Image 1 (cartoon, helix red, strand yellow):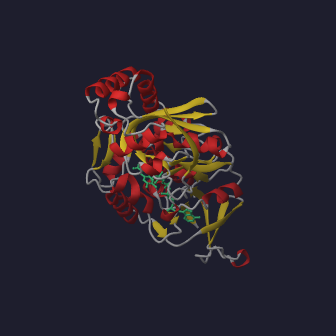
Image 2 (spheres, helix red, strand yellow):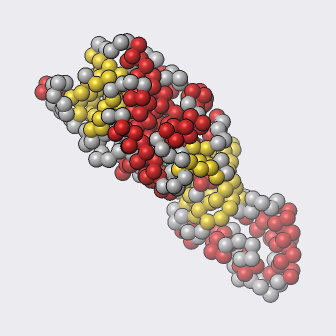
Image 3 (tube, helix red, strand yellow):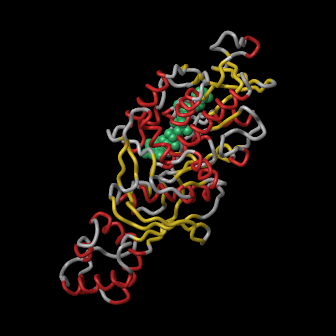
Length: 424
Ligand SMILES: Cc1cc2nc3c(=O)[nH]c(=O)nc-3n(C[C@H](O)[C@H](O)[C@H](O)COP(=O)(O)OP(=O)(O)OC[C@H]3O[C@@H](n4cnc5c(N)ncnc54)[C@H](O)[C@@H]3O)c2cc1C
């Protein structure tokens, strides 16, 4: 029997395996795709934003975001950078964001893989864990839908057994990388509660037609999400207009609130400020000055001096303003309405992209059943969870990987120390 089995060879599973093996355990990873660390390769646009110098509770979300900070107290940013160095990886920092110095996500994956090989960690590929049973002190893992009556633990690959099990099977986000949500029913069958998984860090769909007209435009904006008339969250940053709605980092950061509300059938609006760096009075004054100075120009030409022309054209249309209206005909109340429309553009959020496009999931294994120092399930000794399968989602900026490193390391180390203390 293997000391520790880990389900999933992603960032959390590989880190857990290394931590456990460094603490003397014999470790096996079961991975249902043909490659470890697939998701790591797509992170940070191929550069892998591994962590962030700024850490506080607002960077993590879930039913109990403080859980992430408790885990980071045990294994935080400094520990992550030291861990990377122990893998032979130097990191660099830009405005608080950490990346491998090579600026290649593959450096992180290869660093983890070389250390797994050095430590003799056994990684079994194309082994899909389909059922887990707890039998006294042991876990029995059935794989690839093996028939249970034929299952012989002495004869894998049909069945495996272990005393300590770490489930690091990821979420439902980006299933092409292997995280297909199959970890949730495995957890549930062991008596663990699941908070409904939903996409987070995802693009939003809007009702208005301006988006299809202005698709492809990127601009600075402040976006406020309003749920049932109440402000839920606000962010400033780069907005990307897509043919179906809004995207970009600013939207990714806000999306989990909109998704959760839409899932509960609540009304969701986005108020977009296309001039976050100028107050409404100043914008109005600029419009008054320019329409006077360039009185023969059509309004669209005047606005094109302020903002992206394609966006200006579709916004004017949406605001019901003729774009060929000459500057000299634009006065007081009319320009006030235009300025207000550009500062408080209201949009109905009618949907969101699915797990296929989401970067991470909100929801997952409820953390109030888990000890934040060890990642062990309080009621099920020997069972640990790590990474995105847990009900913690980070904001953009390296927070999801930081939680994967922290929870993975703590789970691996704790499982190995537990194994040792039992003298197994
Ligand atoms: C495009 C993209 C960009 C991102 N960029 C960043 C970034 O720059 N910084 C950041 O912090 N975060 C980023 N993230 C999020 C981050 O990558 C994830 O939160 C993190 O990798 C999750 O790691 P994990 O090990 O928990 O899960 P995963 O990496 O999903 O690993 C889970 C593993 O378990 C395997 N598995 C699942 N079920 C089973 C089963 N039943 N049997 C056997 N194996 C199973 C899967 O195949 C997979 O290999 C990004 C995500 C995406 C999609």
